[in-house]
Length: 456
Ligand SMILES: *[C@@H]1O[C@H](CO)[C@@H](O)[C@H](O)[C@H]1NC(C)=O
Ligand SMILES: *[C@@H]1O[C@H](CO)[C@@H](O)[C@H](O)[C@H]1NC(C)=O
Ligand SMILES: *[C@@H]1O[C@H](CO)[C@@H](O)[C@H](O)[C@H]1NC(C)=O
Ligand SMILES: *[C@@H]1O[C@H](CO)[C@@H](O)[C@H](O)[C@H]1NC(C)=O
Figure 1 (cartoon, rainbow, N blue to C red):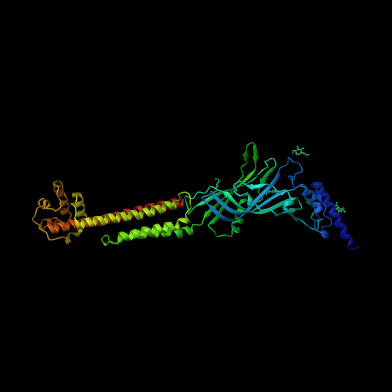
Figure 2 (figure 1 turned 135 degrees about the vertical axis):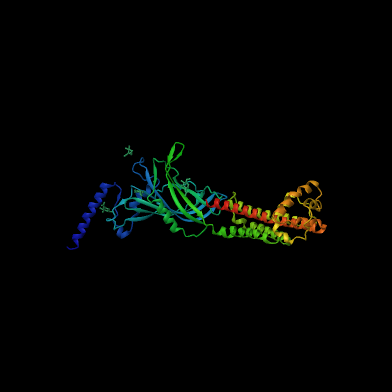
C-alpha cells in the first residue's frame, strides 16, 4: 500500500501537467508512453517527419524566427590575388517547431532528443559572400528540446570573397564580411536574430582558434541591415570579421636583411675613396640585393603595390645612387691626379677657405710677392677672366689665416701643379662627405616616411 500512494500522486501530477501543457501550447503534445521500455517511438515523431517539406508554422503568415551564431575556428588562408578568405566556421542555428512538444516528466525525464537532420525542415541560411556552396556538409543531427526548440550545428569551410587591401603589407589588417541571409524566405516568412552577443562570439572564437598561423582575430562586429532585392525584403545579419597579419615572418625575412644591406652600403662610404675597393664592394652589394629580392619574391603578395615594394625599390635606388656617387668621386679623383683642370675661382676660394687649417702642409713661401702678380702664373688657368677673378679669393684666403699659401705657386710649376692636385683631391673628398651626408639625410627621411605610413 506504501508504494501505491506515490504512484497515484505522480499520475495525478502528470495529468495536471499534461493538461496544463495542452492548455498552454497546442494539440501537438506528444504521448511518450513506452519510452522507458522500447526507446523513442518513431511513430510519435512521424507527424513531424511528414511535415518536413514545409516550414513548421501553424499559420503560414507567422514568420519563423531563426537565431544564428557561429564560432570562427580557423582562418585557413587569405588570398589577396583572388580576394578570398578561407575560414572554418561552426554555425549554430536555432528555431522553433510548434509541432514538437512533450512533457519531460511524463517521458522519463527526457528533455532533449537528437533527431537526424534529414528528417527535419531546415532553414536555408547561407553566407552571401561564400564562393563555394558545395562544401556545406550534410548528414548531421539536430537537437530537439521538449519545448519544440530545434538546434542545428554544422561545421562549414567558407571561402568568402573579401575586399583585401595589401597596401600596408606585412602590417595589414583586413575586414571581411560574413553575411547570413535566407536564400528564399523574405521577412514575412523568416526573421533572423541572435541569441548570443557578438563579444561572446569573439571571445569564444579567440579561445577556439588553435592555429598560431599568419592571421590573428582582432574583433567581430555586426550590423543588421535589411536586404532589398527587387520588391522583396530579406532579413540578414552581417558580421565584420577583423583580422590582423602577424608580421614577424616578414620582418625577419624581408625588412631586416634589406635594412642591413642598406646599412652596409651606407657604411661602405667609410672605405677610402682612393682605395679602388669601394665601387666593387658596392656592386657586390647591389648584386646580393638583387638575388635577395629574387629569392624573397614568393613571400610578397602577387597583386597590388604594397608599401614594402616601394621600400625595396627605395633600398635598391639608394644602393644605385651610392654606386653612382662612388663612380663620380672616383672619376674626380682620377681627373685630379692625372690632369687637374683649372678650378673656377669661386670654388678655389671656397676650397681655400675651407682648407685653411691645412696650410702648414704647403710648400715654402715667399712673402714679398704681390697677390696680383702671383695669380698670373697659376698653371692650368688659361682664361684671363678667371685670372682676374682669382684676386678676391686669394685676398680672402690671406685674411682668413693662410696668407702664405698662394704665393708658393709662383716659385715652380711643380708645386703649383701639386697644390692644384691637392685642392682637387680635397674637393673630391669634400664632395664625397657632402654627398654621403645628403645620402644619409635622404635615407633617414624616406625610412621615417615609410615607418610613419606603416604605423598609421
Ligand atoms: C498515451 O498512449 C497510450 C497508448 O499508446 C495510452 O494508453 C495513454 O492513455 C496515452 N496517454 C495520454 C496522456 O494521452
Ligand atoms: C493567420 O494569421 C493571420 C495574420 O495574423 C490571421 O489574419 C489569420 O486569421 C490567421 N489564420 C488562422 C487560420 O488562424
Ligand atoms: C569593418 O567594415 C565595416 C563596414 O565597412 C565597419 O562598420 C566596421 O567598423 C569595420 N571594422 C573594423 C574593425 O574596422
Ligand atoms: C533567439 O534569441 C532571442 C534573444 O536571445 C530569444 O529571446 C529567443 O527565444 C531565441 N529564439 C529561439 C528560437 O531560440
